[in-house]
Structures are given as C-alpha cells and as structure tokens.
Image 1: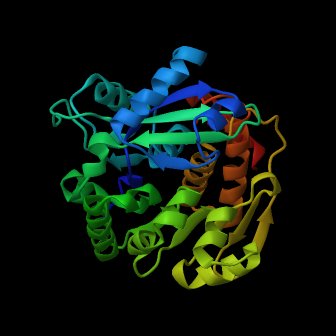
Image 2: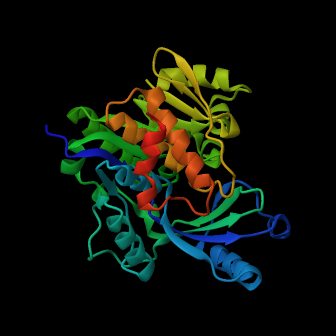
Amino acid sequence: MHKIYDVYGVGNALVDLEYRVTEDFLAEHGINKGMMTLVEQDAQQHLMQALEARYGKPHQASGGSATNSVTALANFGGRAFYSCKVASDATGDFYMHDLHASGVFSNLGHVRPTGISGTCVVMLTPDAERTMHTFLGITSDVSEQELVPEALRASSWLYIEGYLCTSPSARAAVLEARRIAREAGVKIAMTFSDPAMVQFFKNEIDVLLDDGVDLLFCNEQEARTWAGVDSVEAALAALKPKARNIVITLGKDGALVWDGETSTQVPVWPVRLVDTLGAGDMFAGACLYGISQGWPLARAARLGARAAGAVVSRLGPRLPPEEHKPLLADIG
C-alpha cells in the first residue's frame, strides 16, 4: 500500500498551563517534584487558584507527549496523522486549531463530543525541572472510535504514547491499532512517557508493549524501573527481547542507542538549560523523522539530541516551526 504518512500517532490531547514556581511552593503543597500526577478536576482547579494567586496567569500551549512528537516531525518536513480526543469546548477548539496549524492531520473535526478537554498544569522550578498535575478530562475516554484505520494503514510507523496505559478504553484502542499496523506492515514505535507510568502502571504498560515493538523510547529512570535493575546496561539487556531497536535517553550524558546489533553512545548537545519540558517528546519526534527518511538509528538519534538540546534552551515543550529545518544542517 502507498504510504501517505510517515507516522500515525495515538495519544492524549492536552492543553498545557505553564507556571514558573519555586521549590518552596512544591513543598508547601506536598507535590512530588519531577513527576506527572493524575488528578481530578477539583484538585487541579484548587492548585491553579494557588498558582495564580502567587505567580499570575499561566502560559497556554497545546500539548500531550505524542502531540509534541508528531508536531516536531511535521515541522521537520514529515507527514503525520494523530488520533486523539478533545471536547467541543474552548480548550478543545484551541487544541484542534493549534494541531492542524502545525501541519498535523487528525481525526478531529468541528463536531466533537460535549465534555471537558484535558489540561496539564506544568510547574517549572529554577533548576529547569518540570512537575506536572494532569486532569485528563475527555481524553481519558479515547478509544477505538478515534482510530482512522485507512490513515494508519497508509503510514510507515505507528507511534504509541505510554500515558495511554492508564485508561482501559485507550489500552483497547492501542491493541486494535497494533493489530491493524501488524496486518498492514506498519512498524510500531512506543514511548514509556514518564517514570510514574512505569512505577505505578507497569502491568498496563506491558499491555501496550504486547508482543514487542520495532522501536522503544525511554529515559534511564524508566528503563531501570521497568527492568527492576540498577544500571542502564542491565536495563538495556532486559528490554532487548521487547524491542528491535531501543533509545534510552540519559539526560546530560546523551543517549544510549541499540540498533538490534550494536549499541552506540550519542552525546548531548551543549546548551544552556532553561526548561526540560518536552525534551523527550522532541527527541522522539526528531528521531522518528530521521528514521522515516531512511537514516540509520544512530544518526536519527543525533538529530533527536540536537533538537532536544534546542528545546530545553527555551521555555515550553516546542520550537517555533521555522527553527526545525535549520537543525538538520548540524547533523550532516
């Protein structure tokens, strides 16, 4: 079948509400730093009231892990399709228009279900680490109904967001998407998304992994937690039966890449760290772009490291569209 899209993503649709906070604020409110925590709407609203009282109005941006990744791929020049769910509210309108303006095709239309679209409160501390409290809203009900099988079959890659593990309907959607992909010869990539997903939902993460993937993205903490080991080397060995190719990001130490035969250390790109939000998402999106263009995994991961370095040197989880393609020249 002729491939129209490079990547077909499935993930949560969220609008990020970003605040710059102090360590004291997190301590006062008993918030676990550096983690993503799922909360109910009342709890999120209460937190936002406290944040706005101290820090003012937040910066708003459409987000979600896989959203950021497919948007990056589109901005590099790839073709992406994204399946997700937002409501017919102002937040959903903002998200849909922003996604389509980025050049990403989707299942979203102007007729959408009633409900409350998902939001993520992002708290950035002075050390550039982000802490997130997420109210999934209607995106927790993302299901097989949001899949567009003909678009998936016309894609080179299916990309699965690990955050989907928390929702029974989303897990069912992922398994159906995997089935369609395997039947159509579409390769499957997945990200663990967040240490909390592996720590608290490992059985559900393993449902998404199913019989394995062609490419797995994770960071060192996620890899070690999933494997129950203390070293990244032992984690890589434990993950190999589940993935034909593996990328483990290592923060300031770059990334460890396994291409099915050999492992390669990809160095970090030296930058001034401002905000780590979106670094892993950008890495995955850039890497998927490289792979979709036929690059070897190590070269694609170098683009991932370069792009992640660019995004952490500024506020927010994304780069302006015009700043993507110039990064390609740095990879050679």
